[in-house]
Image (cartoon, rainbow, N blue to C red; front, top):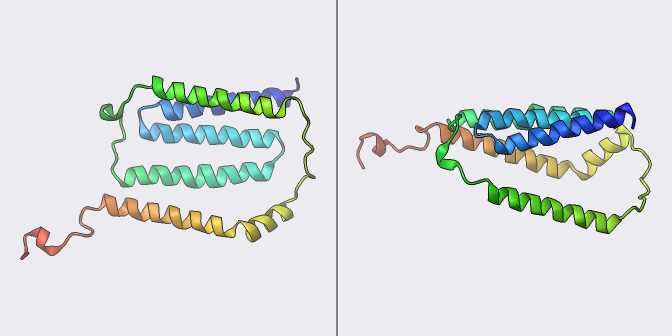
Length: 174
């Protein structure tokens, strides 16, 4: 086992642990920060696998934009930041479903592939990746950006009680 293998396993363990803390913590802001740790560990895994472009896209897009948008929306909507006792549910049912799903997927993958080897395509270049992104995937990226913008506008509208109120609601004529 090489040093890269050990580092890959360590970063994978950090990602799994942080992912478990994302769903286990009772604080919404802490869950967002654990998500940053999880996504950062995944970016580290990509760096170990010498996929630098994917690692930096992971950091810029997911850590830099999505998590910041999540935390910004939480703070804009004035959602409860601390622990919320009224939202707690017993975790054994979710753990049972998640564990059963994970075990079922592992059995399915092991049964489907056994020990067969899969030939990988030739390594890509940044030029080929950019060509695919800007030719085949432009529409999904634009739809995602409009969706995130709509979520941000919705958070602003929800956080401002004075938006959308009629003058009759303020004591005027009906």
